[in-house]
Length: 300
Image (cartoon, rainbow, N blue to C red; front, top):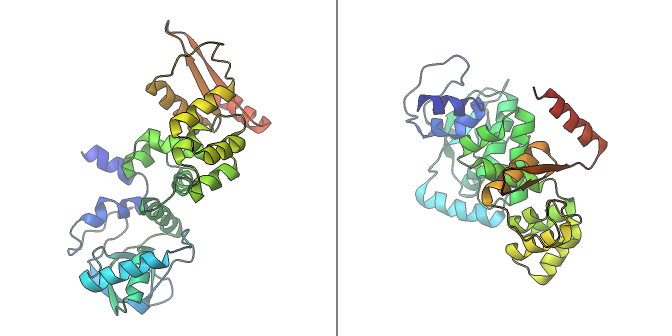
C-alpha cells in the first residue's frame, strides 16, 4: 500500500493535490514535509480575492452547464473546495489552481465567499494540475483527453504507466487514445465533432488513407466492427497472405496498440501458431526512421 502511494506522489506534487490528498480531513493542519506543498486548513475566502489562472489550458466553459452548477450551489453550497495559491506580491490575493468552473458558478450564484484550500505550487505544478483537472472533467472528447495525456508525458516526463496508475486508467486505454493523435487532423476533427467515434478512428490508425475511409464510415453510418473490416480489406497488410482469414487475438491487438503509441509509428504484429512471426514498423519520415534506429541501437 505504501509503495503504491509513493508511486502516485512520484507523478508530481500537482497530481497528488487532485488525488487522495484533497480527500483527507482538511480541517487539521498537517506538518510541513520537505519537498511537499504545505497544506492549509479548509477556510473561506472572499470571492473577489480570487482570480483565474491566465495559463489555464481550458478556455471554453459551457454557459448552460455553469448555470446548472450555479443552481446546485445555491441549493447545496460548494461541496468540493477550490485549491488556490497566494499571488506573489499581492497580499490577500489568490490564484486558482483547481476549481475555476466552481468559482465561475459561485459568481453566478452571487456568493460572497467560497471554501478553499491554500497550497504553495510552482508555475509548472499549477499547469500540471490544470491539465489533470481537464482530463478528469465530464464531457471530454477522446482527442482532448489524448492531448492531455500527451502533455503530461511529454511536458512533465511522466510514463504511460504512471499516468494510467495515478488516474485510475488502464495502460492500454492511455495507449489507444494516444494513437488517435497520429491520425490526420481532419479525422481528429471528425472525432471532436462526434461525426465518428473514437472506436471508429482507432480502427483507421493504420489505414493507408484514413481521411477517405473516415468520410466513407460517416457517410454510410458504419459500425466500429464494419470499420475494422473495411480498414483490413483496404490495408493490404503484408502480414496477411491472400485467402488468410485469421483474426488477431485481443492480446496481440493491445500489444500492437502499446508499441504504436510508444514509438509514435504504426506497428503490425504477425504472430504464427508455431510461435514464430514478424513485427512490421512503418515510418512516415526520415526523422522517424532516425529515431527508430537510435532506439534499436540503444538496446543492449
